Image 1 (cartoon, rainbow, N blue to C red):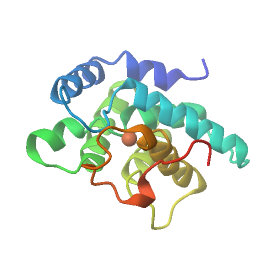
Image 2: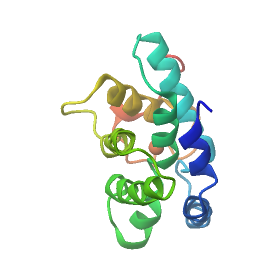
Image 3: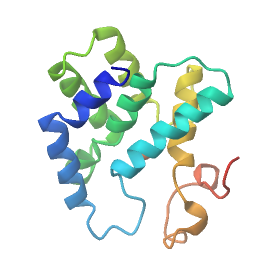
Image 4: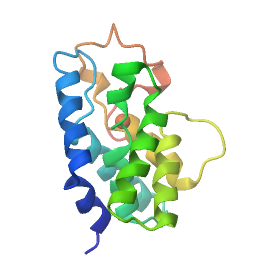
Length: 161
Ligand SMILES: [Fe+2]
């Protein structure tokens, strides 16, 4: 199966519980949510950007990283741990539980750890993943635009740029 890890993640008990906990914690949140719709948007946009830019990438790694990259938001809401770090720690556990090969685990965790930062040394895939995370948002029609603390360069104010 092409998306083997991806499908193991969505059926992992720890993952399912965290997605559900995140939904509860974000109930009533006026800003962007971190739900399955966001996770899959990031994955699909990253796949499109890889194709457009001739970047060879394993779709299973892209989808797995997209499913896991914001899962640590639970920790951020509860105890203030930055969610990239918390997501990487949770991903490490879940990926071990689904017996993800070590090399793939490292690639997935690398994408998670660099998804918030536009700078630094990044692989072509990590750049695409960062961009896909921002492009997945619909800032141009967001009702909380004025209260949002995202800097302008992160906001997605156009479609298809
Ligand atoms: Fe995200």
